[in-house]
Length: 273
Ligand SMILES: Nc1ncnc2c1ncn2[C@@H]1O[C@H](COP(=O)(O)OP(=O)(O)O)[C@@H](O)[C@H]1O
Ligand SMILES: [Mg+2]
Image (cartoon, rainbow, N blue to C red; front, side):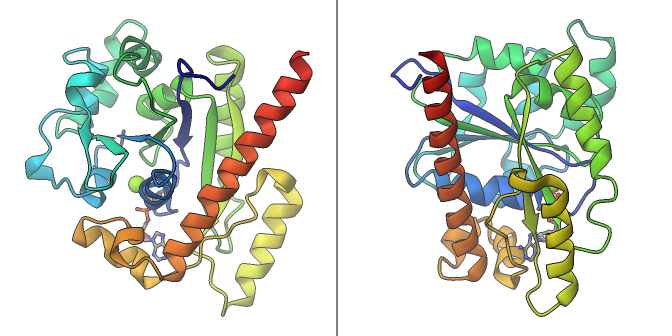
């Protein structure tokens, strides 16, 4: 139950497909949430796009999620404040690419992120959300994210083959739930890069909703040039162009997520009595 000692809600942005909007959603959903909540973004993708997009280019990154995973530094030492008030970042360090292989030989290889977050509880005091940006694969980095969170959000590009490949990630979620993390839930599919001028987008969206029903967020993220320009300025689109359709959609998505979280908490409370 909410209270001063509650642990932050942990959500992984995952999909083994690249270019579907994981990183864009991590950055911009986190920024929108940060207007009301305290948020940490963990960049778990060796490409480090979430770090760049939040204003931390490769040269300035120093140590980050790799250092955390191998147990070299603690969360408190590694997370950094971003330009956005209330938004913090655990960057991807330049060694993270090696982690996928190095982790194979380590103890508790799937649990390292979870354990590091537990060990970092003190540094996480007061945080409401942790969003984890996963790499475009279902390897050990994504597995670490799925073990460390209670909720997975799958960004799905609104294109013809949207549903193709989605079974791969949902099967992985089921497997992790059975074997490693019974609390894990698929808490939503977000349709991204929706093109209003294209009838196909509507058809695909209807298809995805027919299949996943209320797992799909009502909010749809439109394809919007401002969204794709923002990272090269090291800014979330909400700061780059607040009035753009992309920024507005992420504000709506954050509001919808908070609404869903409240409804879920209420339900859990009702079931507990
Ligand atoms: N709503 C959008 N409108 C326009 N371009 C977008 C949108 N969302 C993402 N992009 C662009 O598409 C590319 C892939 O998005 P990204 O978030 O990096 O995907 P992923 O992290 O899944 O690989 C990036 O160049 C990004 O700027
Ligand atoms: Mg990415």
